[in-house]
Length: 436
Image 1 (tube, rainbow, N blue to C red):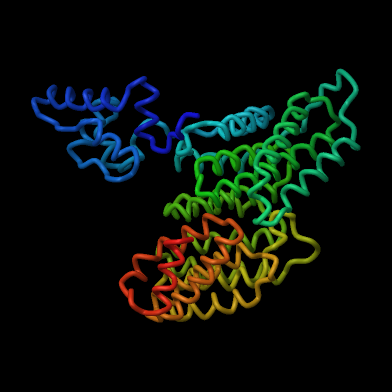
Image 2 (image 1 turned 90 degrees about the horizontal axis):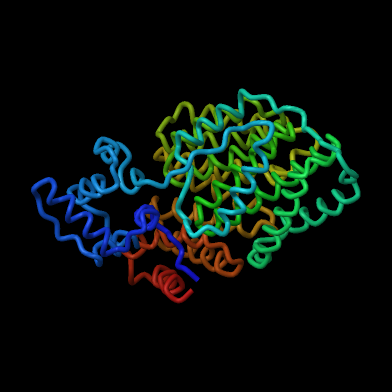
């Protein structure tokens, strides 16, 4: 099997049919055309494509020449974002669901693990979603239509697969993809009544959302974004505004995670404008607060946190399935994270600790994430021993349940702990990270 293409430089090179030595030759030739010289060789290309080093400004100038990219974009976008390979989203429309889902199902088998939507594409999609009303689901009904009994079976199977705990999800990727393919095939047939069509589109949206979170937890962010993109098209076609807002909030959460809070805030401001249920609005305002905290917008952040708390207290009746888990524990922990980002680590640690205590045992992955937040807060406050013990607990739990995203959170903190090597709890954490 071919190796995964994990870097846009490799993608741009392979798209042009170039080997690593050939790309190196192209760079040297570009230097000669500028009456300059370059010593780039195959080994240097390999280092760049494997994230072992970043090309210096001179080499990026020559790479831009090779790929015919304007030099102004190199400076504005930065490495590696100016390279070819960023995707644009499919516009929302009455027949956009199947193309969007087909694209993501193809992408799940694609070797290009990095190709993601640009920030402009995501914000544009969010604006379109907020301003475009879904059209009635068309049904050809040129044969015997899909009956509700079959949809009952598909929903039951889909709900079972999407409801599995983290430990079990590792074994169901193929099943989820196959089930989503089946539902997409039926949607493409257009042979159903409007109520049945709505159920099929909602099912596809929920399944694609779940698969997106699986990819996100594995650190496969481009794939996660594609699944959420397909889910948004399906939710929009169904007319379920709250479900669509939830999917947009997932895209925003990912943007914040990837250090792009500006995009996250723009997406969420569009999403919250069309969200109906108080619990859904609470979650969106909470995620907006996280983005605003990352941007250093203290006043806006506190306003969003207050709104999130107010909305959560107003909730009546069962919330939408995608935010059924939203609780006061989540509000406390994310509020604590916001305060940490705004320079209040001690108060942030207090809130995070309170939230962790309230979290149900069933939410192990969330517990691991929350504990990592607590560890970061403690480390920031200078409480190294307690931070190391908390990080150890988080890492052990994440390794047990198979949650790579949680493991990555702790590994990102290790350089900070390494400064305190020799302390018993710190050494225990470093050893677990080394051998786990």
